[in-house]
Length: 390
Image (tube, rainbow, N blue to C red):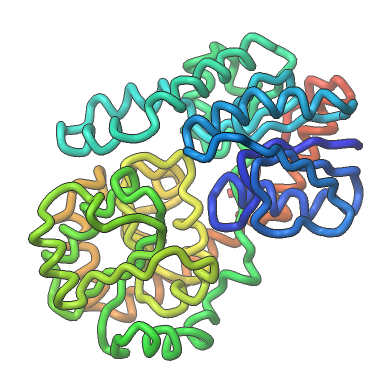
């Protein structure tokens, strides 16, 4: 098949982009693969056809709007068996992967208390609204097969589009089970802790994310403040600590005592998974939450909230991780982390079960399910796409 994959950018450190990278790696041996993106921060595998959409605008939101308009012209220059969109754009397509429906997410966020609600509404309202209109465009094109990355997203699509659940197959994201594995602790724990200046007896919690307000860094910080002094938060991601709302005095005090450390964006995130004791991820809304899956594959206990769809759907609280009701339940998160700090063997057993859960979600499985969708649309079949085993 001749396949066009359309995405905003091509890299391995953003969730949606990572899906395209892994999919292209597995499709290229059997298909003619074309990738349309505004930026290629790494080279695709040999045989993949690159179509870079050069943009005049540099600011994020005008650039995204320009991309939405220009990619249509570029894709229509050729004929494809399958056009697969990983973001809504103004372009007829055979397949659209929904990474969340903004209107459904917005409705749920309106029920948040005022403080986290402001953090959410601060983010991308205009561009998300434009993408909502484009998503509506694809819903009107009934020939577009819409897939969802989680059951929650499927329900959002069904609610918004009035399609039947069986018309919206769930194809969850995957994880590189060879790159993210429990042996990372042997490879990276001592080295990375030494680089960061931490002792082996300190309890390190990892947070990974780029949008500090939206990803709930403030709640991770407030959680750390409720824990014993040996608990430390390591924040990996692009962002300015001054952009984090809440008590700057609290943050400055924790940073001064090195209980909260910002290391910036690092593409070698696996070394942090190998260095820490648990992942703390109180994001305000995640249609999936790839960092949760990566941490679980690395054998790390995860502490997250039900606002993170993947964690909500696969984690049994206290069995293969911890999940609290809301990201602002900082006392609940602190209690679970304290349990891990006081019971190292419990952390090991939970980490083992985390790995067992993650092994159900490989990128090979993701590509297999996606290829089944392509066959379905090319052959005009109405047959149901098999769901991943759980």
